[in-house]
Length: 422
Image (cartoon, rainbow, N blue to C red; front, side, top):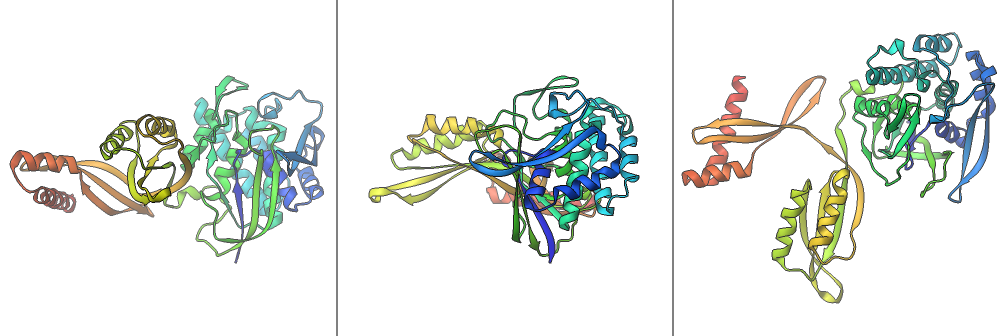
């Protein structure tokens, strides 16, 4: 059995929230304070914790109180101008537990790479507050010390909420998610979604920890839960501003923590999707057909109906719409405008999808688009599915007065023949 941890992030993640969850689940605050002294910056801050309530739920709030420094509004970070090499030197000279040191170095490296990419400078030249500030160092190294103390071997993380609005940063007003966080998401293809809260929910520090250490993003792994830690955020939000850390045991995976670059290993491509669902029993079937067209026109990924029996034994249909989160509002508007429903259920789910692309195949009757899907392992592509586009085949079948199945088969034969020759 492997010691596992899962981060449940309904209101995002920040470094101090992760520290709070670790202390709440049992990591001694005194242990963190003592180990962090080895960094040699204890005169710059004071670490403390207290129990607080967020929407009537109890959680632990950890504070990194800065001493003799003027704190900046953005992320509550100070104006310490440390570059990446200086931070790496602090960590390397601190004689920290091996895993905690390796994880800390990997997190700072990934954060510096993201910040550097945004501003067009090398990671070693980055001296932005999000990298160099005292509280960022305490949050990151303290988190790694806590995970090491718990003996966690694999960390998993839920999909992350995007947040919204703007924040004031050292380089002006920035949209949320801030550019560095978006770069972090891109580096691991992190599944994200909107929970409707227009605030900064994932900080660069929190994002860097999750993106570096998480083995996978999405649903919890199969595990036996042995402890729950609740880490409180600073603000009151419409839902409890709590980062939840589940700690337990599960079956050993092929992947683990430690390098900070698990994305080099191939995993199924996960994406966040929204599912809208409603039942209808008083609408013409012709109108349902029109709804399909209207939903696809605004960006629905898929639309389908199922026959159901409703109250008073009335026959009806269950309308289900699958769309990307950013299309949810447009699809919902179509359903309300074009059907008689009074309510729509919303779900946010993860789906594993194959990589795919549209190719063109030449036949004696004309060009046909073909959707090709594949999986990839150790740099080797394995074709999983090849499907000619229905409409292209139908157009050629009508034009040449041939069966659709014949055109479809000709296209497949030509594609495979070209694939073998290539």
